[in-house]
Amino acid sequence: MNREGAYESVTKQPVPQLDLEPRWPIALTIVVVFGLTFLPGRVRVFPPWAVCVIAAVLIAPMVAMSLSPAKERWLRIESIVTIAFVVFTAVWMVVDLKDLFVKMVTPQVESREFNC
Image (cartoon, rainbow, N blue to C red):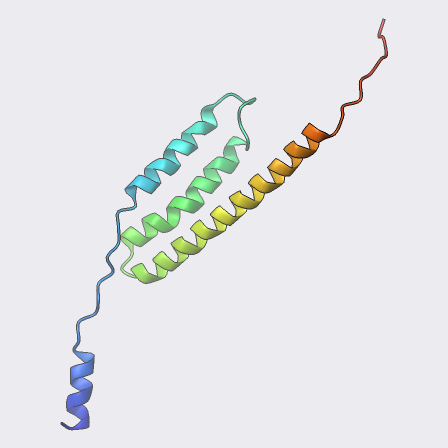
């Protein structure tokens, strides 16, 4: 077998296809969480615009991956965005729990002033 024959046999191998699972359940979940922005102000954690931005940032790579022919690149971007969101959320929850524990343990000072 000469060099050209070996080159042709390597280059004519089929390109493996990515076996991707559907993204619509995840996108639907994000949209439902986005719907939580319509809760009353006393229940909200973020302002309404922040939830819109987070939902858009999470859904954009999913939509781009389903529409783009370069699925590997968008799969990588999607995984980076998802991991960054999970890490940010975990750090946020730890900081929030720390605040909660500090408020639970710290005694509250009572005011004995009378306003007439």
